[in-house]
Image 1 (cartoon, helix red, strand yellow):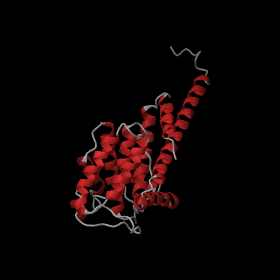
Image 2 (cartoon, helix red, strand yellow):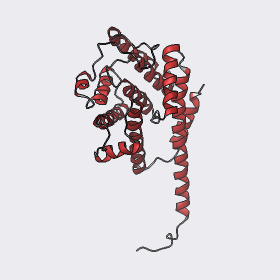
Image 3 (tube, rainbow, N blue to C red):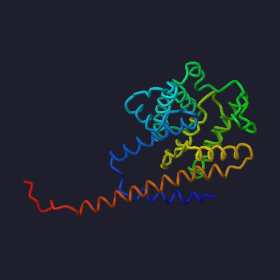
Image 4 (tube, rainbow, N blue to C red):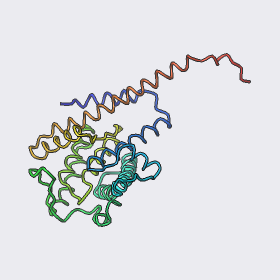
Length: 272
């Protein structure tokens, strides 16, 4: 099982490096947002490629031959992503209103019929496709289970490692499945809310066949067999990869700065 102390140590090592420039931060954040919108929607069946998603978010141009609903879903998730960033960095407490608003943004434009139900707890039974053993909360249980989720969340804040809390927040929320639509996308945003809030890096579950299967199987094991370890490890491994990748980037930037400072003939030039 992942030792969360390793993630803490990597985060602290990253913080010891000279901060990235605003230009570098903006470029990284832009790429991560595009990857999140593309990957999270692709897990749910969107046909847009990462390149097409980037073009849509940057220029507003739609892709000929691709469902218009996929374009709307990307724009919705983009707005929801920005809202979650504001929530996390603004230190606003996580409550039912915030979660409802995240879901409203995630599902706003996708379908006019669904829009009416966006942010509303569902009043009908739903079942997961292909996993009959998983039982989501009954409509009459949702309100109390969501209150229980938030009570749990606020009780473990500061007591458990943020990456573990992020994984469990995702798992517990998606198992309640409180909304008619957008539960998976909302769950992945809630997970990243917790990571951002505590200075960890955004993680994006990848939608390729193997990655998606590993994600779904880890969820199934947790929901059906009450075996959370695989899902906790999956999330921790994603964060570990992101932290190591960021650390290597900082090392390369630092090294290039040192090299560039030495490789100049301009020190003795008089520009006056």
